[in-house]
Length: 455
Image (cartoon, rainbow, N blue to C red; front, side, top):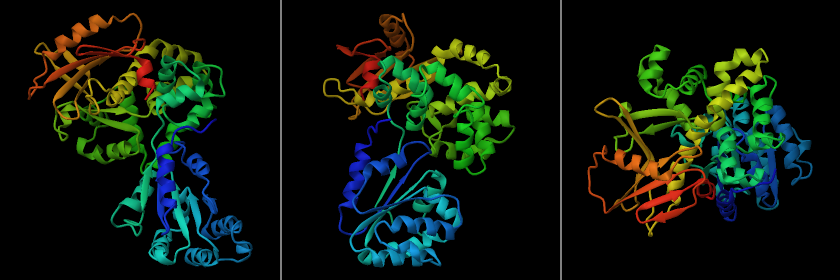
C-alpha cells in the first residue's frame, strides 16, 4: 500500500535532524497507526535502525550490535556488559554524525528498566554526542510516563515529541479509489489506521472484508480491539467493560457506573486512560462547563473499536457458532444508523475548513437538552467563529431522499430552544447531506460528502 500524508511529521523530524547539536525525538501513538512506516519513509543518512523485541537485555544488545555494525564494522564482535557501555562505545566509534532509531522502545524498557536513566546520562552529554536519537513506541501509557511525567529520568530531554494520529478519510478515499460516500462508509469500519486499510485491500468488497476479517473468529481482526486493550492499557478489564457498555449505548457516566455497580468516581481513571489512548471520546454539550458531568457523553472514538463493541462483542456466542450470516444481516439492517454516527462526527471535524465570507470557525460540538414536554432536542453542529462574533448551527444527516429545506425548517425551530448568552453579528446555518454540493446562499451553507472528504 502506498505511503500517504505525514508531510508535517516528516518535515518536523527532518528539521530536528538537520541541527548540529544532537537531538532526541520521540514518536508514539497507538498500534497500527503507521509509526514504523513513517520511520522507514524518513530514511535519514547514516542511520542505524533497531526494532526491539521482548528478549532479555543481553540478547537485545547482541541484535542491536548487528545493526550498529552496518556503520561501525566489527561492532558486533564484542559482548557489551550493559547499556551504558553499549551506547558509549557506539558514540566513541562513530566516525561521523549518525541517527539511531529505536522502534518499539517499551520492549527494551521491559527487559531493562534502567534504560531511561542510562539514556539520560548519554543525552546529557550532548556536546560530546555523535548521534541523533529517535525513540518510537506503541505502548502509549509507557511512552507518556517515560517522557512526559516529571518523575521520569527522560522528562524534559526530548527536543520534539510527536503523537502520531490516525489518517483522515480523504486518504482512505485515495488508497481504495472510492467515491466520497463510499469512503465515509469504509471509514466507519476501518477508521484512519493504515494497517486496517491494508487488510481491506485484500477483499473485493466492504462486507466481504467485514465478514472475513472481523466477524469470522479466525479473521485477522476478530480479536484486534481486545489485543489493543491488553497491550496498551494496564488493568484492561475495567476499560474493556466500559467500552462494551458504551458500545451498547450507555453514554452517560451514571449509566456506565450503574451497570457496573460501581461509584462513578471509581471510573474516572479508566475513562481517562481510554480517552488518552484515542479509544473513547468525552463529548461535552456546547456552552457547558467542562466539569459538568451531567452534560457529558462518552462515545467510542475509534471506528473499528466502535464496530467491534457494537456488533462483535454482543454476538460472540453466535459468531463462535459460525452463524456469521445472522450477524451480517443485523449489521446491514442497522448499517445506515451506524454510519450516521461517523458521518456526524466527520461533519463536525470538517467545520474548521469552512471559509465563508472570510469567516473561519472553531471545532464544532453538539448541543442537546430536554424540552418542557421531555422531548429530546439535539443540534448536530454548533460553534462560534474564531473571532467569537458569529455563530454556526447545523444539521448533519446520513441517508437518501432527505430534503434540505425540511432540515432547514427543523433547524430554525431548534434554534428557538437555544438560550444564547450573547448577541452575534450573524447566525449561519449549515445543512450537511451526503449528496449535496458545496454552496452558500446568504447565511445558509450546504455541504456534502465531497466537502468532508477533501480536507
